[in-house]
Image (tube, rainbow, N blue to C red):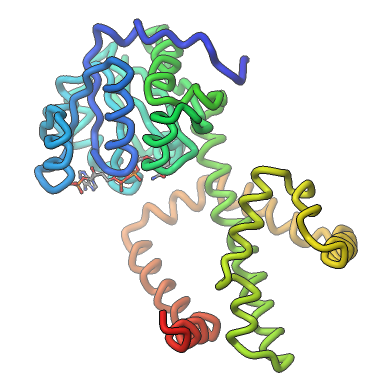
Length: 325
Ligand code: NDP
């Protein structure tokens, strides 16, 4: 299938009532973009500060159940962890055959946590961008990557609806990417559960080794991340390429990085660990089942407290205090 989509036709949305359910990060941005694309979205939100802000920006705001009932196309833009219950209690009762439910992340749908009535199309329009930038990059037309998929095509028109929505929120300006809820969810979880823990472990281990070698906390933590140099390097990785950006470092640095990388390449331990996370934790559904258990939230809170008490976190707080932050 085409991976860059130029053909999306907004006319397919012209006579359909669109509701943005949840006026938070994504919801506020997507509602504004839909409106600037010539559509008239309703907003569904609890009656609080987000609802007031949406009203002040001129949107017609309703309780979520009411907006879902009015909608032909409902964009589910509340946090993933509240979606299963909210869909069951407030959204699904308002959906009718022929309607479209739009998710912005694949997790709940792929892992079977959303009960959506028969006859309702289920599609994914998932910006790979924070909400504020979804708005800014629509306004300046620079665009953002956007994963799109049709998960259930009950009407036979789900694909054209998906493309039109992606275009209306600005998701085709940067080239929409045909994906699936499975792929989007699995890759997100893989980054979170394989890539980032490895990076956190690298920083934690580097801190321990460098401090044991007698160097000061200030120097070590600034070298590792407090200076924000890694953020600069990652920005250039996105712009110039993983290896393309090496030219921005000194030749000593380039030689040292590539020499040490070559020495790591024979070691299959990381690939084995990553494959185990991908297959045994993520694709098997084991992680999703564990995270759905009621006690998982408490476990997260306990792990956050433990992380805040590690030697690195304590040293970081002391260094920040000394630096007067
Ligand atoms: P937010 O945390 O910004 O969503 C908050 C919205 O959800 C608010 O409107 C809030 O309303 C409402 N809400 C929160 N809890 C409840 C509840 N229990 N009942 C009813 N409404 C509730 O979410 P995001 O915009 O970050 O995420 C929305 C979707 O977009 C998710 O599927 C996410 O995975 C996806 N996404 C997010 C990205 C991001 O960068 N943030 C990027 C791409 C996709 P209230 O005012 O009542 O609190």
